Amino acid sequence: MSISDIKPGESVKNVYFTDDTLSVDLNDGRTITAPLAWYPRLLHATKEQLKNWEICGGGFGIHWPDLDEDLSTEGLLKGQPAPRKTFTNVA
Image (cartoon, rainbow, N blue to C red; front, side, top):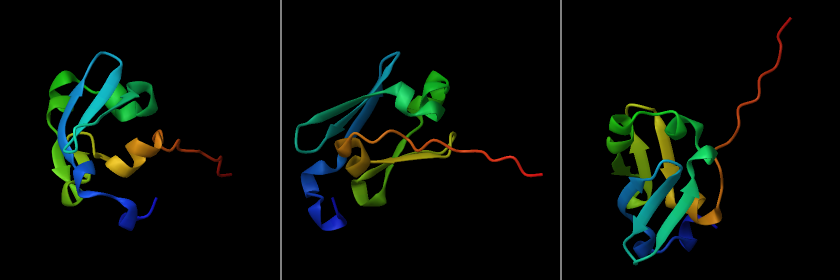
């Protein structure tokens, strides 16, 4: 999916959580739900931190300023979990 494949209705309308899921309502009427386990920063956040989100990226992204976390509707629609950091030992 390229930026030209994103449709105006795929912009963020609302974000909410259960104990183990993130759900994003889109302006076209769809809801994307993903496991919080895919997003460790969100999984370990407080309820107040989760509630403090804002729409960014021209309407196609979600930003949590308290967590320095960003998700896009493109990634959510693709079913992409957050990238895992890899650590290497430096001698």
